[in-house]
Length: 63
Image (cartoon, rainbow, N blue to C red; front, side):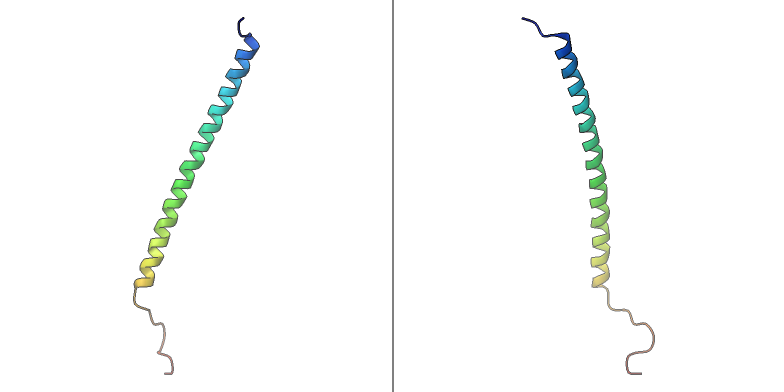
């Protein structure tokens, strides 16, 4: 008993769909990694700023 041509075509269509979805998820993962990298850099910059001595603007309080 063989496999019908329709069954083969249906499986090929499913594989094509799955490959397209896989590619979409890969692109999303790439975008997420890039965003996480940017957020980590911003986080480090903020941490660095917190370590700096305070800046005084204008005359000292009470002057």
